Image (cartoon, rainbow, N blue to C red):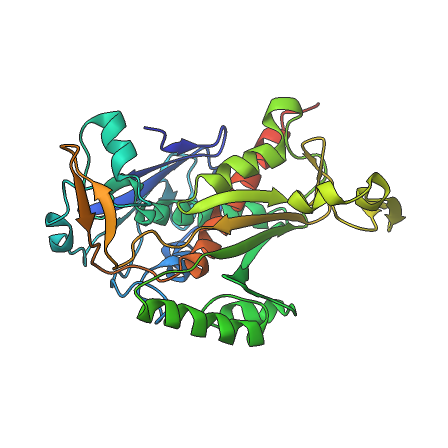
Length: 354
């Protein structure tokens, strides 16, 4: 099962949604990096469930414990092992549907591949797995800070409601992490209405990386934008990724899409950033911009048609505690995956020339 990501800065996540614990091992982190539970916990608190009325009411404190790789507040160069214990898992809602495949979930595909699966909350396919990504991403973020690289994300659109203004300071002031306070209010109202209907909503999450040095990435097969695409598409519920203008590029001319160069303070810059901060698979030094299409949460408490493991057609009603929209909690996960990619290519780039 593919649970490892990265080449030099590598992470392996482990654990299931309703198992005793979940965690991550970070290997390849250089020694001497300032690290503490407080630094890691800041990012985890932004991802955790039960933080507001627009998220799942499951109550998990998600407190991180550092088991190895950190001594006296600094990384030692050894593998960093991070763990948290599940304390509020309720598997009872899944007992009645354990032999049925939930529409929109990985129940059927896991069963088809392995012939055996953990039916409790999706097991390994649950978004609870992303705790490990965010914990590891906090370590990667600390590494990137040594190079003044900054990563942040936000909800650009939820359902049909799109932001019209941008105030970065507003992102963590509202429940949906939208930089437009007016749009944020409408988004919250839409989520609550969907929740009342026993339904869910998707949206568009954007993640940016600023102050990225030019030249990061690998040409041809391991292009930086290709690795970012893989990282973002590995996040549960993400069904599409675009870089820069992305799918709008096909409607532009070459002259419109090209980012023309100029010199500013001795540095090569571009007047625009249609390429999203990458050319030929390498970073340009301009902000890296990626957008993620996030599907509506699959668990909705309405009757749906399905089949069971015996091949009989059934009607299923999925109950339990679920996010009416996963978008606000995808933001810190997308930030983590961007940080993990950049930390890896940053270290890899040190071997590119004498």
